[in-house]
Length: 38
Image (cartoon, rainbow, N blue to C red):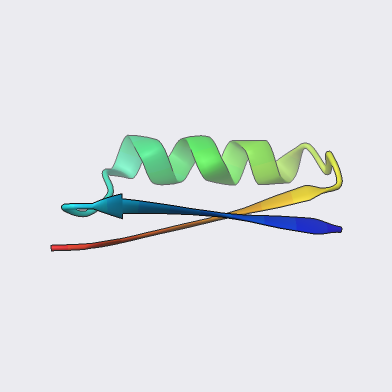
């Protein structure tokens, strides 16, 4: 599998985290990891 890291300066929102979780649930072979800072 391939990992894609998404880093958002300023922090992430619930909606962004939910979208990543839904995408990861599709088992597309690519795993998305979301992170951020404040």
